[in-house]
Length: 531
Image (cartoon, rainbow, N blue to C red; front, top):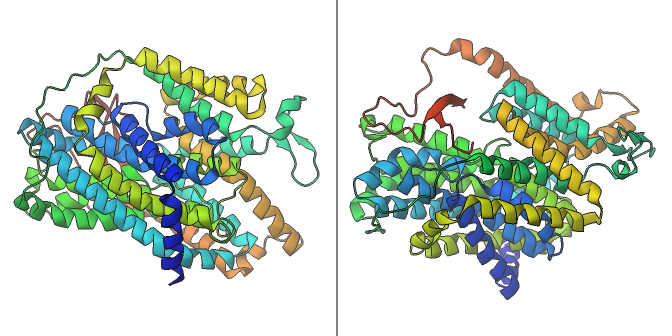
């Protein structure tokens, strides 16, 4: 009953006219940046962080959450109509979604994607509503040694479940932890890696680092693109699926909701892996797998449902444990820190209005997306006509003004530009900046928990074995490492190929130049796909 009562209070906060407006702004911006290839939710939230600093904390998190799950909807539109995924999680949708467009069923593909997204997102929010209090009670009973184990598990999963090289991800996580130590020692006040620079005594600002690595780097990459504006000539009709379409898609939507929910909880999970896993599941369970890649409605319904479910359930580890499960959630983690709010088990009691207000706003936002997106598809598509040069110049101006306004110092502007160039170089050399930012966020918490553990144990590492919670978590980490090293030797069959250019359709998303292997499945990666 307490949960329902708290949720009721959350709805009273979400329906406040100001918060309702920011739910609307968030989902509209999210859909828009989902439509625009290249400028995904990570870069957008990074660019908007300085603006949220002046806002009410609840309204700012409501807006940023709306941008995140709204972008999942938006990425579907161009995937279906243009075979051009606006978001990495929508790459899988291009396989069957674009085939449906070629068959004159674009409206049905968009309609089933919107319905599946709504159901998947709502199922995940219901799970978040009832699971979060239970997990928070468990987390409150955990000591600092258990939090050290949790942070290490989070870093391990992020580096091992990502879609890039595990070795490169580990290197980036190590760099992130190193950067997190820059500044004054939190206990004895001595300077660490400041090289005599006074501005570095306070450490590197998370907002400046994130805006550089994701915002400015993405703007530089956008300037490199030479594609002309896309013109949509496809006539969209019959948006609401027929009874036969719904009957075929319903099992995929159900499975995608559950699969996406549990993958979203895992650090390193998220939309890409959940949509890949859902597509592989549907193809494996299909009576006629050869239909996939040729316009199977389950190939659109399952992945779209799963990536929206995962984007909502990903808030569980962030709000309950204080562990961002992906880069976008790390941005929202940073936004909370900017307001002096530390995500974790105390969030539900110390800032219950924000906690339940954000959850309630997600119910409202999902309904808004269903109502707004289907009739406004044509409006969002027109955004593809905006010239990239105008968009980049305007965005860069906002970045520099915004980061300067945080501390009124030009030093942060140089940090943004330096990390922007670094992020661009990393993208060219195949290093994912995600693990770096996540480690940068988790580093101070890891250091604080580790030092508390050492103070409690008198400097003995035995505390990580004698504390049952940390011992179980470390045992799970060792088991996962063992499975990763030795598990492949017991595989008898090769991993299923999700999509093959020789499957009867020439539907590579674009010119493919490399293959991503993730979670035991393979996906052809587009050279211009924002992974």
